[in-house]
Image 1 (cartoon, helix red, strand yellow):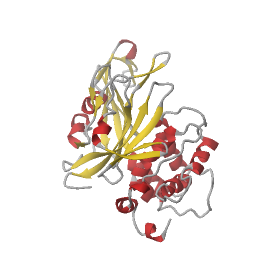
Image 2 (tube, rainbow, N blue to C red):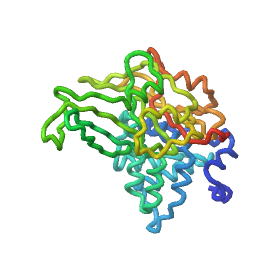
Image 3 (cartoon, one colour):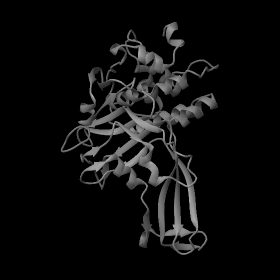
Image 4 (spheres, one colour):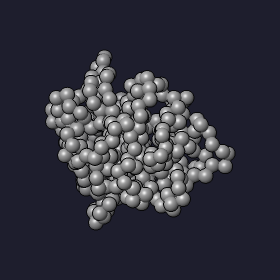
Length: 331
């Protein structure tokens, strides 16, 4: 990259770049899934800013995921580079995924983030990557007999939302995720206080949300064979933190009333469960939408993004990437 890029953050660079810098990616060995996820990472300008804080002293490694990810994201901003992500794909093929294989976008998303942390030699940078995406939750199981609350903290890189047969909304799916469930009969919880299985209630509570929120719409269901749910799921371009109010833990890091989330990337699945194709809509500068179908990139609109809500055998949104921002912010 030129010296001017090194003086700017990725966000500033993207704002000054032309359409040519939203790069298409060649499909190598059925790499459409990785291509679509990489487009979402490229639009997440904060990620490259974090990776650029890393200055490895032990040289480069062709099998190091964070190193190759940083190179790929930088090369995607350089229109003169002929194959911006070829080495990154080779890196993944060496140790994590198989070529000529259909992969799941949510699994690839997690795989890249997990390997980027594990293979990062700078612990502080690794933690920044984690904090950028980490959703902290707490599972609470309440024994109906002794009333003791069993708590188990955990974290997620994407919010996995089940969808139902019929029409869905993002808010409805979120409410279902945090809904109280009763555990009875074969689902009874083994209460340590009572020293036996008891009817209980199970609930997931939200502790904190990250700067980048990934929502996974769980469209694949396995009942002996994998099938895809094409059911409609509507989602907004922007939503306020109030959408999570009912699911907050009493120990939650307060969700600020003056903050909201704005959609900037959508990974799309096209076709049936076993023979699908992935593409992506991205909005890197929070202004104009683009559509990336492997090497083909073209300007797009919010109306076309809405076309991925679903319906009978239509293209379907699979991963939604939202960026936290102030309600008073224009970007």
